[in-house]
Length: 125
Image (cartoon, rainbow, N blue to C red; front, side, top):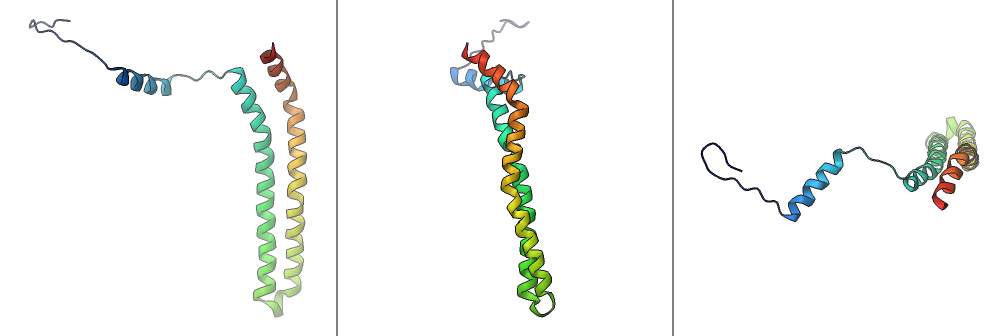
């Protein structure tokens, strides 16, 4: 390639530079999700939602239980009985976390099953 003054420019890239260019370019290209990736994403979304609900309920239950324990241990003369009641409520909320996980997991699997089965049928052909 010549410019107007008659000098020649020559561009060369090493394979390392080409790889770096391709890597940067791939970050900006729209991602096309394969059927296997879509299947894995759908399967993971089922357990993620159930886990999220169970963790939220578990943390709330633990906080309530902790508040009840605090009432019993710090203010024993004034808040012993209310602390026990608050602690039992916290334990009940904690006890709901695992059944909530199982229920949510079952419902999400039922909801997503047709799509999962369709994708697995296509992939196994």
